[in-house]
Length: 186
Image (cartoon, rainbow, N blue to C red):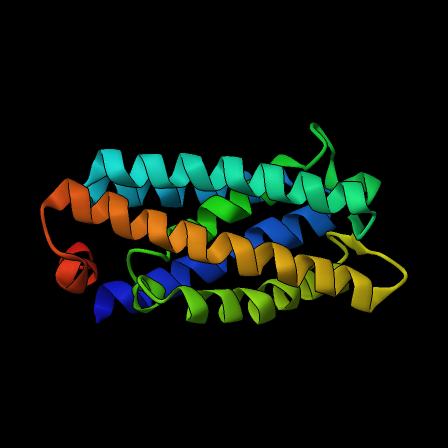
């Protein structure tokens, strides 16, 4: 139970470091926080390669998904959020930050694709909306359009990432899906 609570706390600290750092024109703060958190997770894990693969895949999925959302015009980034690539690095590292929860505090979602999709449909837009309120991201003038696109993005991405987390960690530690999340959180 303690690792899951700690995971939620560290996730939220990193999330706010990304959002508040970007909103204040210092996006590197969030990147550093997530890199440290992800490295900590990997170093403490019995499944280092699996977690590293999950985090790298989440980075790539997040970059592709947010680039696609950008191309629809649903969102953009303020100049102070420091665009290096089409999607700022801090934004893509937020996907890695989320992936750190998939083997601990969000392990309950693994193996439940419909629940994961519904959670993504609601949670994704909520996070981006909060990011907008904290001046880290701009959502389209048609807010419902932007939130709808982001909801669809997360309704697709979250089941994929949770399935990947399940497969990678189950394969790497030799457990079955039913007890993998409990053993990975120990």
